[in-house]
Amino acid sequence: MKLLKLVPQDTNIRFLKLRVPFFILSLVLIAGSWMAVAVNGLNLGIDFAGGQEVRLTFEENDAAPVGELRERVAALGYGTPVVQEFGAPNVVSIRVPLPEGAEDTPGVATEIGNQVIATVEENYPGVRTDGNETVSGKVAEEFSRDAALALLAAMAMVALYIWVRFEWQFGVGALFALFHDVSVTLGLFALFQLEFGLQIIAAILAIIGYSLNDTIVVYDRIRENLKKYRKMPLPELLDLSVNETLARTVMTSLTLLVALLPLLLFGPASLFGLVAAITAGLFIGTYSSVYLAAPLLVWMGVTSDSFVPKETDADRQEKKVLGQV
Image 1: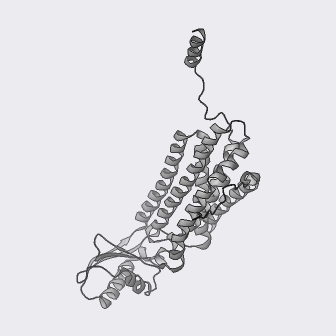
Image 2: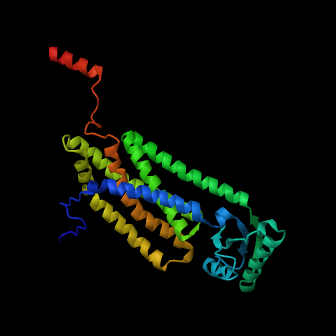
Image 3: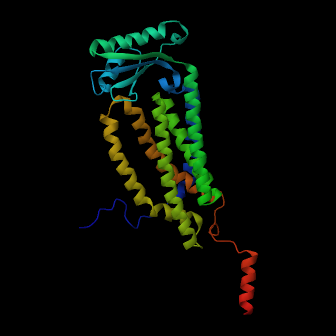
């Protein structure tokens, strides 16, 4: 039985022929994304904007009906709630956004929490209230700071890893590609005003991981070909390397897309932002690996001698001694 090949073995697409227009396009996308964030802002979720948190225990149930709770609390009209298990299957944390100014008005936030509790108790007898607290803006600011630090630390460690494994030019190329991926993802959330919460930070970290994986595969093939084809012009060598890894890239992307599309189209609303971010990042990360990470090596002076060990004085002395023998 003949194996199905999504990408023919003799594929020879000249990706780097359009490296300048695509690089300009990438710069425009980055600038436009940050402009959208500055003008529209991000539609921050409860994790970053604060809200009212209610903790409940369903004493007569083995597990809390998380999906039903989300629908019933959303019907109160305070926005999309965040409903999560809290330490045990029958314990939940329900967080709802607060109207503007509610946090500064005594009793308003607590009353909203009481409405949530009353709604749950009305439909589910035997519920115990464990807490009714306001998540302040200060706590939300700490979440925002920690999330930003997590993203910066991830990108910095990625650059350091690639720098050590390859050369500094590869580290700079990978870091710029990741900056592009994160920027465009943030721009999409600012443009379409999708809710931006902690789960989106997890999605961005997943995008960084996927993009990095794809970039390292391409870089590893480039390094091999630099040693193998010493006289080949660098743009041609980069095209060859990308084409040789294209089958793997397409197969990985399609496999992930098959898993994401059903969730995107038919999954619960609470997961839409997370799945949408990863789906967009799948295409953004693949694009940056091909049209940013690889072409940048040309402009940063990578040559066929980049991975050839330099001859030291000891090596030359040894050759001289051997020649005399």
